[in-house]
Structure formats: C-alpha cells, structure tokens
Length: 393
Image (cartoon, rainbow, N blue to C red; front, side, top):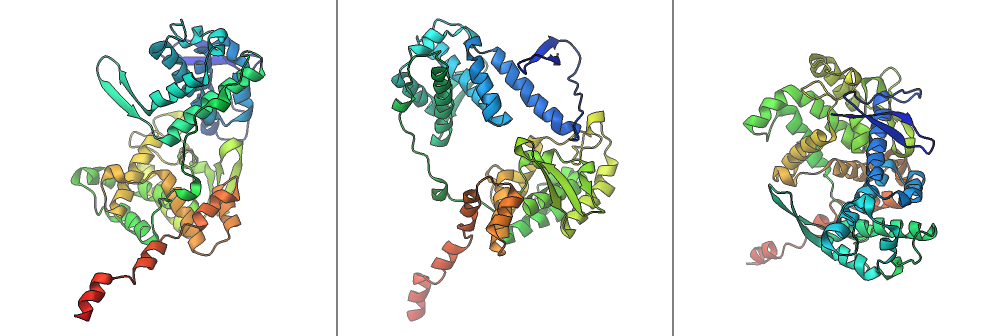
C-alpha cells in the first residue's frame, strides 16, 4: 500500500493521506517531471522520518531544510533516528520505547562521554532481525559523519534553548585522512579503452553476462561513454531524458545539485553512441509506465534504469578493464574521477574542468590535477636492480 501526499501545510510539510493511490506530481515548472518527482520523493521520505522523531525538534527540521541539500537532509535524519534507537535499545538514558517519545530533558542530560560511547559502538555493531544476524563495521569517515550529524543536532537544540548546554566541544576527535592523503582511484586512458572494447564486443564477459549484453550493449556503451566524457554524477545521468538532447544544436541539458541547470556540448563520440542506442536498442523496448516514456536509459522491463543497476554495470565493465573481480570494480563516482584526471592530463585548464564537473571549490579539482596517473610507474621504471644485476654478469 502506497502513501499519497495531497496537500501542503503552511510550514512546508506534506500532509499524508493513506490509500491505494499513487503519488501524483503537479509540475508547473520547466523542469522535467522525473526531476521534480525525484525531489518530491526525497521530501516525502524526510517528512516521514520527521514524523517519527520528537516534535520539539521542529526548529532542527527547519534548519536542515534551509541549509543542506535534500539528500544530506535525508542522511542527517536517518542518522538521528539511528542515534535515538541506540539510546532506547542500548542504554538506560531514556525511558522512551520509540524515537518520537524521547524527551528534551533526556537529551539535556546527555554528556560528551555518552556520545563518545555511541561513536565507539558504531565502529562495530550487530543487528539481529530475527531471521538473520548482520555485523556492521564502519570506518573513520563514516564515524566522522555520524559524529557531525549528532553535533549539528545538539548545537541547534542548544541555540534554540531546548537543551541548556553545548557538549560538542568535548567529543573525541576522529582521524580522517585529508583529501590530499587519499589515493585517487580512476581508470587510466588505456583502461578506459579496454572497458569500452569490452562493452562493444562482449570480451571478458561470462556466458550468463553475455546473454544480457546482447540486449543492452548499446545502452551500456552509451552510459559508460557519457560518464567518462563529462564526469556526470550518478543521479545526473540516471535522470537524463530523450528530450534532454538537442542534436541539431549539439547540446543536452542536465540538472545539478541545488536545482542548477547546465547545458553540455555533445561531442561526436557521444552523439554516435547515444543516437545508436536511441535509434536501435531503445526503440525495441516499450516503456511500461507513462512517466518513463521520455526516460533516456531504460531497463529491459521498460522502466527508467535504476541507480543500483547503473552501479552494477559500471562495476562489471570497470572490473574487466582492471583485470579484477566484479566486486572490486569501480563505482560511477570513480568514472567521474576518471574524466577529471583525463581532462587535466590532456592539458585542459583546471578552472574549465571545475566548471564542467560542477565542483563548488577549485581545490577539489586541484586534487585531480596533482594526481599523476603514471608518476609512480615513471619513478621506478629505471630502478630495475635485479635486471641490472643480471646484465652485469
């Protein structure tokens, strides 16, 4: 049974009316329906989570709506609910039986030590759902995000006078590698060619994978080519429509974070693979739903391809290029890194690459500029001690 949200309250929340009807979007903007529906889907999820949390947190909800991106807002609400469930199930710090029953006075009694114990708990915890037991392990980056979410919550409640003390300064520090310390993972140009050859010819695929490849090779090739040419984010590519492309003008439109629109030029390679897919493979797949009739990339079931399906096909073809297992293949975000390093490696301006990839800060783009794909290989190629030793004999 689906939940339908028909009206908006004055404070921006959607009022829920449960029934068998599906969610309907009344779109009067010039943005495609699928983009607006995606935003509404996130909004509905956030509203549902807020209804499961205490009502005294309304100012915190308002703060998130006005200061963070929708997906970040959703992530913060998930983390807060997880923290409240921890207080209920793992401690005696609250008498509540569900998150919405937690009292402001109980949060006011929390100490920095309580939060530090929660972060330590998150390093490794076990969930038993009755049918299976799952062990979750989190790295320092994830722990830092959880700590940040709780810090934002408690600071906002302190500012609003709901709690009387700010304990966040006493939280234990979490060592997270700086951006410059992390190894940037991206395909080299020769690996990109191996990947595109695999999707073009089926080389490296198992017999089972080949049976699907026969039906989706043009779609998959178009997806991979667009990724490594423009460095699009996963959501930006998944939301592309046929109407997004204006081949006569040689451009297509994408929808970025924060509601931004960008016009991207179409080069010859992208035009060839996208046109080939639209004219041949896509034409043989019938859209099952009216809302998917304009979707550019369709599944075999005639629906807009999901982000999960895109991740899986990217991992599959990048694993062939890397000569590794399917589980060790790269994510779509690493194809974004591939586009960045390849563009900079070809001598393009760092500021032009920043604009193409929609980095808010040029320092993000500079990480790719300082990352030289073959620098380590070049350093050691003339240090062949064993070969030199044998040559001397």
